Image 1 (cartoon, rainbow, N blue to C red):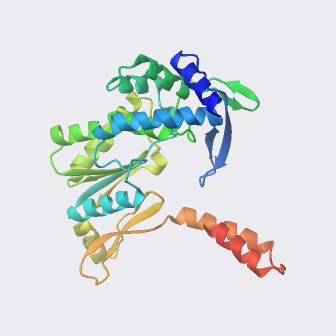
Image 2 (cartoon, one colour):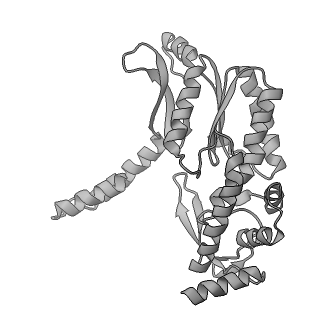
Image 3 (tube, helix red, strand yellow):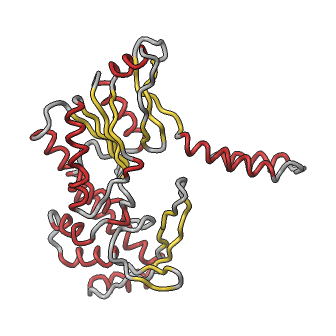
Length: 311
């Protein structure tokens, strides 16, 4: 083991390291599509882990406070709490829910490397990163060179995606909020899952109109089926309730976010529930399983399987 590690270190120092082709496993998604995940060899995972730690130490200090995905001491619960705080602070306004189509798989390598050069000048290290993101993949028994994207499943992909989105969206949004928008704004982002909050509906519309152009500039595209701009805020929720209507909901981090009365019914606040489409899929899976287990004798095993399906 030690000899293998020393050999690996020597190859890296001499610039002779080459990542081995990685296998692709496609995981079904709730929308019927499949998510490709890479499975690297053990040696490549060691390199990915080391590179990821270095990149985190270099870029973590410049990441903005409203980015929560794959960052030290931050998690999805922190993101949801911040979203709750932001929406509660604005009595009225609008939110923009954004989903980027196949974000990880469409990141342009040339643009990503330009962003890395903003804080890293070591050419050997940059070449090593390039080798990792261009790792060949085995698809249908054929080895294919990876010319685009940071494949999900790679240890280094989350930090690379964070760096890319920091320059494409985070810092840009902070800049236009100060220079081009009038009211207060906020943002909660968990990698490519993001919600923008606006005090003024006009600002939200202006942003929603210009964002696709910004993303297209860097090779990204909005998933229009999963993106939207809707009115938001306590006052808007209360006014619609008086008319017998409900304020539109939106999705974030696997939850459906909607406005409802507080526990004591004194004010309106943002609430969360499991996404209906995902819950429906779980029920379908449970129903299908139960049909095949009607005559089973092992009730304990059946119960364990049911719990597994629901989870």
